[in-house]
Image (tube, rainbow, N blue to C red):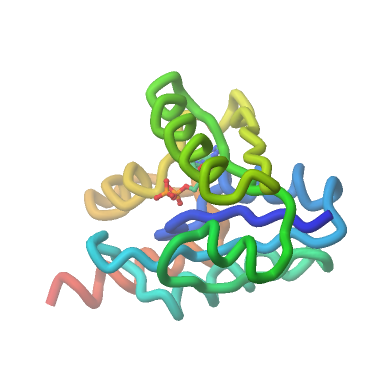
Length: 161
Ligand code: ADP
């Protein structure tokens, strides 16, 4: 079975990494898909996000990183994947995920959505929160992998000029 874990990953956090590590073993192949959304104001370019993901996930041999613009479900169908993986943190995530899962079910009944609960230690971590903390000089350890910590510091020092 092939799984696809789509998201913005702007940038990858320890919460994302935990979901990927837990799910990698459940699939023959797991594709982490950067869903390109032109309307979202991203801090990292798609190429930078891809690089950070590849560095972070290098130890997981059956995990690949890819980029897609357009409907995720079209990508999932094109590569003949079976399952879309998403992470659930708080109740507020649920409504959004349910709507998307139902919409995708309508478009591609053969594809299942698998919602995975965030590990309790990581349920409060979001890419948005991490960027906020970085911007204000807060402690990033325990929130993102070390390569991402460095990338955030580099990016924000560039941005402040
Ligand atoms: P999106 O913009 O599609 O929500 P994100 O990169 O923010 O993209 O998140 C991708 C997926 O990972 C979503 O399903 C989200 O709920 C999940 N996720 C985000 N942060 C965490 C976390 N700390 N623990 C578990 N899952 C998470």
